[in-house]
Image 1: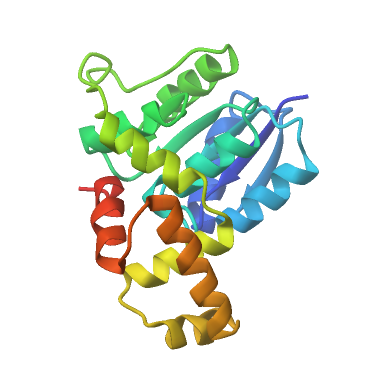
Image 2: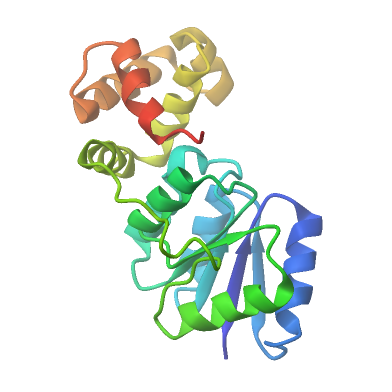
Length: 211
């Protein structure tokens, strides 16, 4: 039996996507998640998932971390990105980082079904008109992606709050941990990115931001 994981933080969109897929995959079993943590928990319990339809920007997935983390932990499960973003650079990076398909949320049902079928067959899928437009991703961006991929979920949560301009004390309160724990995470992040300041980290991570 086919097993689909719909990973999106909008319940109405999850319902709509399941309804669309059910017209073709009626006997499939559908799972849902609404953030990176619930996505990883679902995958840990269901390692025979056939495909993941993943929203790029749901909580915990910013800066491609969700895609990078899922591909790292579950390399045998294909990922189709479903996103409201249609910027060519984002699509190019998404495919380079391991997605098998990029499905804009404006895609009609027939094309979504075609995309899923192609991915299940082991192929890649892109919207018509974009197949020949995807650009090669620069090596510098790939290096940053690898550094992000290597972060633990807790380190990435700290990094997200650093990006928001929060100080160590504020981050500790937000995550309900000690300030010493936050300092330890930031020190590990510095080592991972080979930098010595918050500013240098932000400059590096900017390369993965959506345009």
